[in-house]
Image 1 (cartoon, one colour):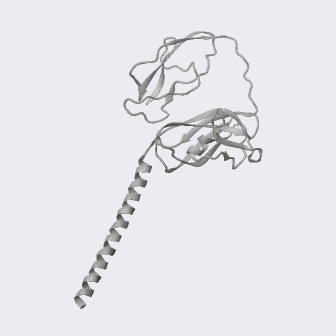
Image 2 (image 1 turned 90 degrees about the vertical axis):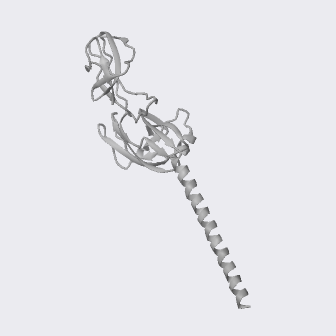
Image 3 (image 1 turned 30 degrees about the vertical axis):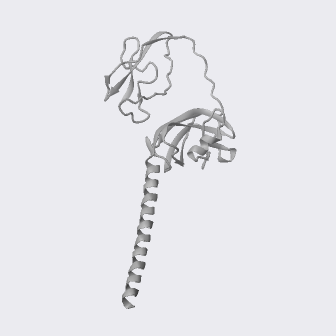
Length: 236
C-alpha cells in the first residue's frame, strides 16, 4: 500500500515533484486514519502546477483522491545554503504495536547532510524532540539521549540502537531528532506506534496465578496439619 502522485498537469505519476510515491508509516486497520509526512522538490521550470494524490495497492489506485491544488512555481532558483549541522532521517525499525510496560529494541538511522563531522567527544547525540524540552516525555518512554559510538563524516549514515519501555496504552508519535549539546538540528524522525495493555494484563495474570498458587499451597499445608491431628487422635 502506498500514497501515489495521481496527476500533475495531466501527466499521471510523473516525478516533477521529485517523488512519485510514499510508503505507509505504519499498519492501518479498517476505520483508522493515517497521516503521511514527506518532502516535495519544486519543478525546475516555472509555471502553474496541479498536484493530487491517491491511495494505491500494487500501483493500482483506489478510493478518493485528494483535492487537486494549484501551485505557482517561480522560475527563479534561490541558492540553498547548507548549514554546518544538518541531518536526514533515513529509516527506523520499531514494532507498530507494543505492549505497555514491555521493553523493545529500536533502530533509527540518520545521515549527516551538513558540512561538519559528528564527533562523539563533541556531544552529538540522538534525543526525543520536545518543543519545550519536556523531560516527562523522556521518562514516559524511559529514554535517555543516545551518544555516538563513532565519527560520522558528511555524507555518511549512522544507526542508533536503543531500548524503550512502552508507556500507557494509546497511539503515539515518538519524535526523534539529532542534537549537539542542547540544540536540535536537521530532520525530525516520526516513529508511529500503538501501545496496548497486553503487558499490564500479562503482569496481572502472572500475579493472580502466583497468589492462587500461594493460597493452594497454604490449603495443602492446612490439610496436612489436619491429617496429623487425626493421626494423633487415633494413636490416643
